[in-house]
Image (cartoon, rainbow, N blue to C red; front, side, top):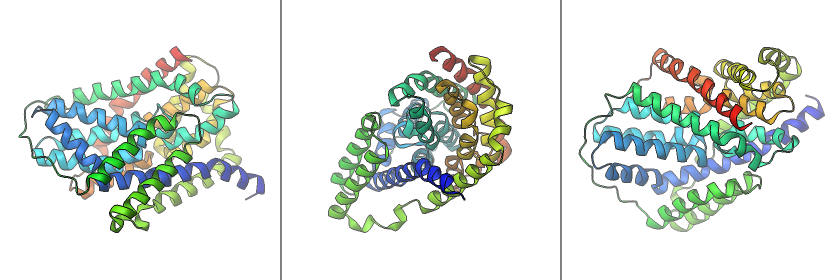
Length: 365
């Protein structure tokens, strides 16, 4: 590997990896403190036994979790809590499982921290003179449309499962209220911190350090090296390295030719469609890197790539790291997810998302 390629790789990947480690520690310790358990139990009480209201509150919780703490947090930590809640209340686990994995992907457009692909795009956005404010200006409407379309399709698919009532379970008492309040406050403050314009690795790392200090004081037995996402760091690093090398060998040129050129709805849709297809074949992170040159000097075309790699990876299990992690959480709860059912449902949603989100992008671009 040449020195300039290594320097570019470190410059692009290192901040992403630092953010990944920091936000994972925050999410893991927040889960230990009971933030997700209390949030879901509170939603169950607020719904007052109505299944559709509970589902709507889970939609809000999954969307907020994805936007602020990233799609991997929703897939890894919120999914088992929601599945346990659904099983305890004897409501459809399939409906709630599909809600978490779909929203983990489709709700990840709004902020740079919502998806690692978004973080990667910031480097190019800054080169094009677009800061976080400009990024949000281009993504807010496609992000809103992505969530609304996802919820609409989920509501139609699981309309029979979302009627009826359940018995309200007694609330779970957190083992340490100080840890719960501190962790919840940190999670709430991260959202505003991530849109201040500073490198997102800093607030994520600071939040992780703060929670580690608090846990050292209150419950140090919960701390350990297992909190760090070693496997994810290795996987992401290997994927980035492979795609950087393949990009130099012509992969980016091939995908650029398939993506076309130009601005406007048809051009954005073609680019987003190519990105979605690539994500389902080779995973969304390398797909983004390979397709970034196809966006040229257009921030709007870059967002079209993000629409494809964020909202498109719903046809194969390996299309995004979050989907793989979600599948493992389902398996751990004894829930079998058949690949062809997952793919067929994705075929209903993904084309709608690509059309509606790129149309929204054409409006704001």
